[in-house]
Length: 116
Image (cartoon, rainbow, N blue to C red; front, side):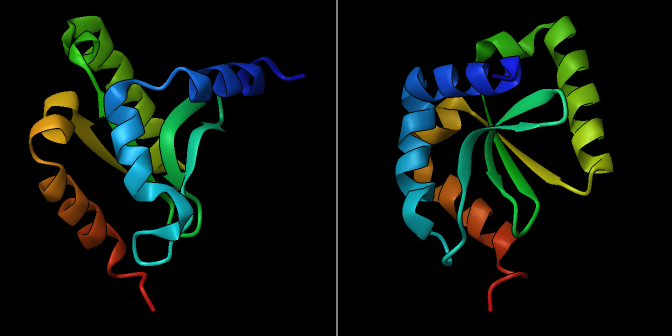
C-alpha cells in the first residue's frame, strides 16, 4: 500500500482534540451539504480536511506550525495546493477551542458561493 495512504489512515486514528471537534462539524455533509474527507492525500501532502467538490482545504495548526521552518514548509505546501486549484483555510487550535462558531462561519462563507 502507498506510504502516504497508510500514514493518512494512521493520522485519522490519532486526531488532535481540535481536529476531532472540527470533524464533528464537517462530517456527514453538515455544512451546506458538502462532503469533507479527513487526512486526505493530495500530491505528496496529507491535508487535514478536503472538500473535493469545492476544492476547499481546511488545515488545523498547533504551536508546532509557528517555527520558521514550519512557516516556510506550510507556505510551500499552500502554494502547491493553490497551484492545484485549491483554496486553503487555516485555523489555529485556539480558534477552534475558543471560537468554533467563528470558524464555522468562515467555512460557510468559503462554501457559500458553491451552495446550490
